[in-house]
Length: 258
Image 1 (cartoon, helix red, strand yellow):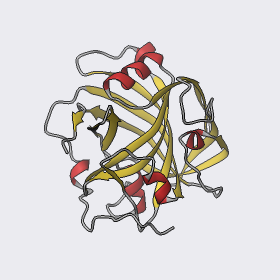
Image 2 (cartoon, rainbow, N blue to C red):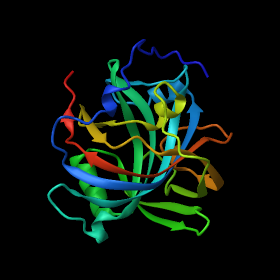
Image 3 (tube, rainbow, N blue to C red):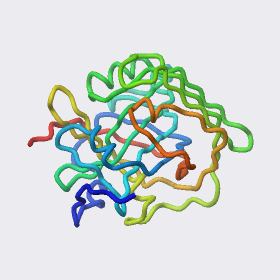
C-alpha cells in the first residue's frame, strides 16, 4: 500500500527510547499486552490527524494499532499504589506520527479504561480521548487471556456506539527484543505521545525497558473499536505480538511550540 505522504529521510528512532533527563510524574506497570496491527490507507489516517502532525510510515505503509493490556501500580510518584484506583484494564486504538521530521510517536484515536476516575483525570490533565468502559481480563492456566471491552461513556462521535472488543490470546515462541529498523521496532517501541486540545498540540514522554516481545496467537477477535475511530481496516488477519510486562515512568505533558 504505497503512501504519497512524504517521509523524512532521516528520522531519529533512537533518541526517543532514551530516558528523559527530568523527573517523572507517574509510575505504572503494564501486563499481558497484545499488539494488533493492520496496514491501512495512509491518506485516510492523515485526514484524522490534528494540524502539525504527519503520519509515520514504514516502507510506505501506514498502520493502525489495537493494543489490549492491564495496568497495576498506577500512581503519582509521591503516592503509594491504592489497588481500587491503581489497577485497571486499558485498550487503545492508535497510529504513528512525527512532528516536522522528529520525535516519532503515537497518536491515540481512543483509549478505553475500566476506571472512571482515571478517565476523568486523563481527559482533563493529559488531554487524551479516554472513554470509560466495562472491561474484563481472565487468565487461563494454559497462559491464554480472555479479554473484553464494552464502552459506556462518553457517547461522542465518531461511532458506532457502544464500541466493543472481545478476544482470546496467548504468547507464542521465545522472547526476542526488537532491533532498530525492523517493522516490530517501528510498531511497538514508541516513547512519545501527542495530544491536541483547543488548537494546541502537546507532547508527552514515557520510558520503560524494551518490550520483551513474543509472537501471539489470537482466537475469536470481534471488535469495532477501530471502526468507532472512523477507520476502515482490512479484513485480513492483523500482525500479532505479545509482551508480558514492562514498568513505566510517565513524564509531564508539554506544549509543542510551532
